[in-house]
Length: 571
Image (tube, rainbow, N blue to C red; front, side):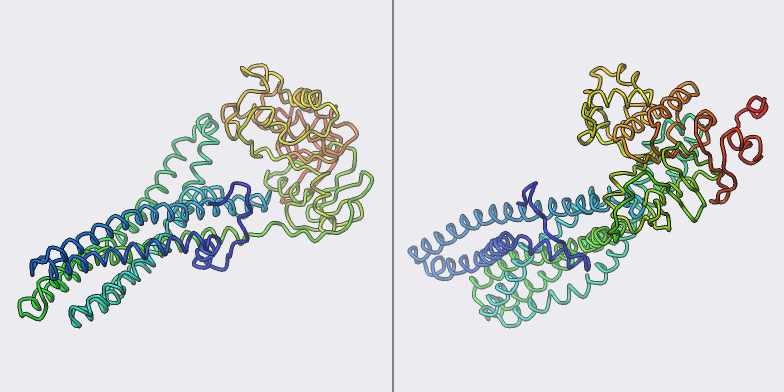
């Protein structure tokens, strides 16, 4: 089985079936052993009726006790050995499935890490969760075809050969039976793939909505929108249920035919054998062997139908995995060095110019416009933005990431202690404890630490869900400040705070970032009053620039957007 630290290899993402084959080729020895165990086990199942017929014809019917004892002993030995083979087959195939499961998880997680910040822009959280929770299991389960599937084919052929010695007609019926079954079940498997694919897509969308609800339930309840969102979720859930019924309908037909058609097929074989025995064309022992072959034939036929069903579902889920693996992170073709001295950032699409060593604010009629500008300045979106005299696209990405930090107000918070959440990597400061305390103070988050039972060592849930929205926002800001970037681009860093806390954070943020470039996207007058320059964006373009008070006096649109009490501000 794959080790936790072992390289899973480079997956074949040219298609779902090719990905399944790649999982097989990554463990050839184990898959070969599973195929051997499955084949020998299935063949020995077919040998049991043969041994029984010899015991009857050579020992029981003529009264030859020596022959009866010999064939009975062989029957017992084969049965005991086959029981051991069954254990080994199951154990080996379990290892095959677990290896495929863990290997798929590793390549998916590795791809998520590789995509980094571009993951959210290319794949929804619901899709990733659905792949990790459901698709991985289905993909690994489909590898059952490697062991019992191959064994079923060989066992089926062996039984057909054995039946040739009994009756050519019976053998011909057996040989033609499986192709007929495939023609009948095949169209249903194709329909199942389409229904299953749509079901998985809807499931991913609904999972994403569940995550959004879990993260914003308090806010929705406070705004009175919980019932509206609940109604929308109920409708989406209903559509997913209806699609699930369609998948279940096709699946029920596949499973019903998988049981019913083989039973009908085997009944025909038994009837033919009984007719031949009644006519004296075959012996009693041969009739018993045919009954035994028919009973054993249930296994390979059932396995073949089941394997077709599992592979059909596995291909659907593997296509989703492959589609995720095909995603590419933002291209990094930059080779130039970043400016050695503090330099201005400029976004030609909006006209925003951020002067070095200053606190700049972006105020937009539509908050998404300010966020888009921040993404371009932080090189999270393709653009013609420049840093000094160089295009951002031409600068090596690692240099941009080491010196420019985009602090999103919805940035992920990973489970662990509060200290690990704030300081996920070694701090750059010489005295990390002092730097942590200073970052917490600047973000006005000391009271959060003091209220927790174990302070910074208190375990935190994923996304810090055991904290309020305002507390999470301050923790995110403290983490960004602790990174101490040369350029900090913060999106709505105080939107969830009360006025008193917001004013405290604004004052301390200006003091802590004195002499370094800082950009905040906000509409809060408490924060804007402490900035050096404000850019007012209308339709994504700079409409006016100046200080907060200058824009209040000269730009009506700005004043209407940010002034909570216009008369009081102007007075």
